[in-house]
Structures are given as C-alpha cells and as structure tokens.
Length: 107
Length: 119
Image (tube, rainbow over all chains, first blue to last red; front, top):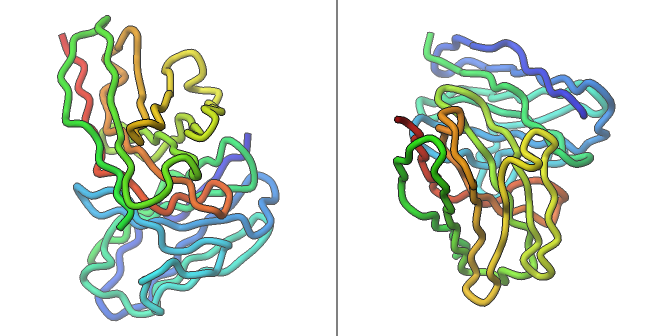
C-alpha cells in the first residue's frame, strides 16, 4: 500500500505571503495526485487533481506541481480564508490514501 | 446541483449495531462510485471503502475489510455504511463522497455524520 507523507505538519505564514506545502509518495503515482482543503467544522473540498489541474471554482493563487513521488501545493498570496488543513491524496490505485495533512496557520 | 445528504449524528453504546445513510441527488446515482471516508477526532482522512450503485461492486480498504459493510439501494439513490458491533474506537466523523470520473478523486462530499460510541 502506498504511503503519502506531507511536510511540514504545521506551516505558519503571514497573510499575503507565499505558502509551499510538500507531499511525498512511497512509490511513483505518476501525476495521479489530488489536493484538498479542510476548514474547521467543514467537509474537505477538492482543490487540485492530476497534480496541477485546478478544480472548478478554485482561485488561481492555488497551484500544484510535481510527478512521480514528489509534489508541491503553492498558495501564492495567502488570504484569510486559506488558513486551513491541506491533504494530498494519491489515486493511482486502490486504496487511495491521503497524507496526514499540513495545517496552515496565521503567523 | 449535486448533493450528498447524510443522516444525522448518532450516539451509541459499545456492542450496538448502526447503519448510516447518504442520499445522492442532482446526478445519475448509478453512474458514479460512492465512498466512505473516516475522520477520527483531530485526525486525518481515511478511505474505508467504495461502492458502485449501478451493480453494487464494492471494494474495501484492508484496514476496514470485515469491520464494516457498505451497501446501496439504487431505487432510492442511497448508500449505507453499517456496523454490526460498534467499538469506542469507531467514534469519528464519517463522510460519504462521490468519486469523480478521474479515478479515485473525490469531487463531492457529504456534510458528515458524527458517530459517538460511549458506554
């Protein structure tokens, strides 16, 4: 079973700054990687799939990159509504595990 | 508008059985896989299993195989997650999710059902 590892566990960023989140797969998942955002008390929502394709309605400040085993989610200029927990998920095969999450908090 | 509406919060005792539901609307229920994702208090997301309502083909994550049963009734566009004997460690939020056309990407989430198991 593929294991997804996210880093860092917590990222402290000031509003307006850039945030860079990492996700590593224990074996290659090609570009079959998605990112989700979860705010407190809410269900997650899809941000990125195919490693770099934004889902419908997702602002351009969110971008994804990478392939194989190393992936990055970048938020170019953090807005107040972006402080949340972010999960990566591989979907190359079943089961499609999530990473343990990165919490983006206000610095 | 696609919606997944889950049944309400439950409080149960260890050893009791439970079945929670997820009703899909706004799309062809039999054409998309429906899955269940667990989130224990303060923890991350875990895939439990997934079902294709069109033919009831079901897959379970190894950690949940034999621990829960996933089913669906396509006549009422509803998927289910059930336990025969709950444990305190089943206390969690459970989300039903729709698998998109892009493999196991989740494009829609239910609002979640909080299950609390306590004596």
